[in-house]
Length: 126
Image (cartoon, rainbow, N blue to C red; front, side, top):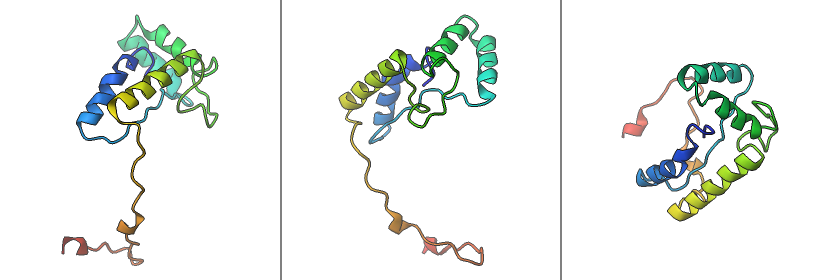
């Protein structure tokens, strides 16, 4: 989710995912680690000059005043008023669309250990 730029699409994206057969949805608030913040800001100024500062301000609002917060529970969702608002909207959309259930358990029995020789097998065609 890119603050200001794509957040208005949140509910429509979730609905489109459901229409395409999704059983559950998640989101990640824009992350800008290392030099990506500078590159993204430059791209914004080039493509969305009137929104660029607003977008970067929302990013910083959601990251404790910085473009990125690497803290484990903050990096995917952010924190603060804006991030909380997005989380609330997302939770409502998930519930309304029935996309708030857990996914089925992963079936590891369907995976096969690779041949140690490195040769791939085509026996799955049988």
